[in-house]
Figure 1 (cartoon, rainbow, N blue to C red):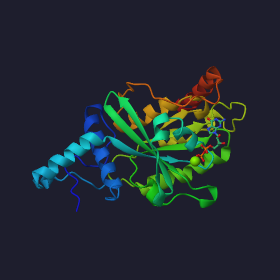
Figure 2 (spheres, rainbow, N blue to C red):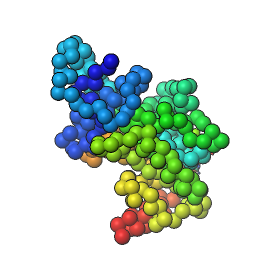
Figure 3 (tube, helix red, strand yellow):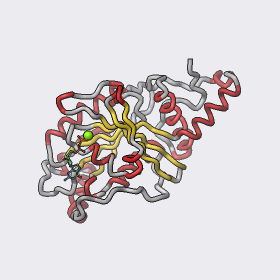
Figure 4 (spheres, rainbow, N blue to C red):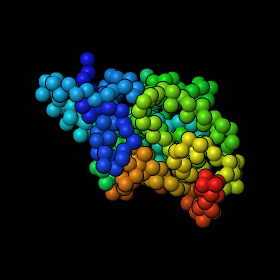
Length: 273
Ligand SMILES: Nc1nc2c(ncn2[C@@H]2O[C@H](COP(=O)(O)OP(=O)(O)O)[C@@H](O)[C@H]2O)c(=O)[nH]1
Ligand SMILES: [Mg+2]
């Protein structure tokens, strides 16, 4: 049986002072899960007695934890909402991607240098197509965080987002523990004319109290910021990126940032009303 060790509890939304502890505990959970081990439910409480397992084993698992700082980040959202386009913007993620055949998933590792040290976000991107329906629980389970996507130009994708969100939350039930970190993302922000959803109508992230961000992966707009949002949700608000994130050249080079800021201000106004 795998002993989880004292620091190996479910990720807690970090108070800043606890950020370091929290990131190790999450990383630990990922390492175990990817080794084919534990389901990622909340119930991995710290066991006061677990220090008593062989000191070598304990030391090793602490070392592994310190080295890990890896998080499973599930990309959720309707087919065509722009998940793969987002994941493949990041150069290293694209070159180091791995197929996980059993889960019909591509794993894109995004390694970031942050004020909390090196952090790897393993983006889990499903390869199923629309007719395949929602992925199995195995895809969603053991997530440390999720990015939930909808396409700003397709109202149906906004509606469908709730099913994906529910699937992530259900597979990662964390009774009695902190909620799963989630960032909600509106994609294809470059296509202002094609927008199908008014800012004030984007109620979902406010209702659920999750961070909301708009991106255009094709214009490299908001991509880095989104990665930072995920780090903050996992490690605490004070985390900063300390090195550039290398991205592919944008395929759209003009984007009306001023107009996008106006639209976002409308979202915020509705959110604070
Ligand atoms: N205009 C625009 N189109 C995008 C953007 N991101 C993705 N798309 C398009 O949306 C479609 C679906 O994208 P994809 O990443 O495959 O979606 P997925 O099924 O969620 O992985 C593709 O035709 C993309 O070219 C974007 O930022 N702007
Ligand atoms: Mg895809």
